[in-house]
Image (cartoon, rainbow, N blue to C red):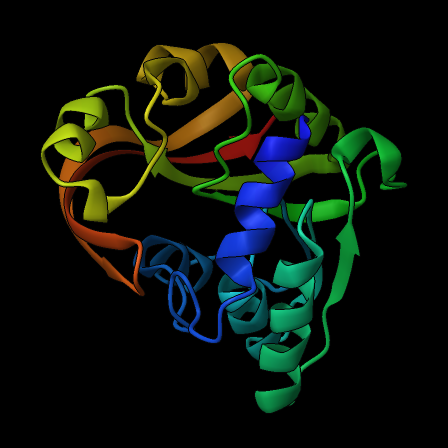
Length: 208
């Protein structure tokens, strides 16, 4: 990833306020609470840690990563404030040492990686998930481009190639029992940068 991408996220996360708030994403919360057991879970592109800290509070063994050291610093402060522990690494995926079938769940919550690597990352995450494990995914759809053009406060990438379609998720995670895969309009109210109506893809899949 280029330096401008890294600088963007370090700048955003260096502020005192939490960019997307400290409460977990609603869809993640709803889906995690449905799973029958806790176990090991990975949070890619975890930013300031709100979702990882929530999972840890439920008893999950949590791993997370991001390219931003500023995100990690705030995530660890949040974890300390909530009296939970998370393993948080900084770096790009190929530099990290996760193992095949290490995780019982992987949570991709607004994990908008650059367009040229996002499918490669998804296929790599699949290798880290055990058979029978779950992917929980929420991110902006390609139709979100119209929403963010009208209201920048709702957030999300400004290039359509970084947004998602149902077909992309089907292609990136082909060997999954689809529990849910939908595109829908939702009202976001997450911190400073997810505010307003947007279009998202929601996916929960179980690895066969």
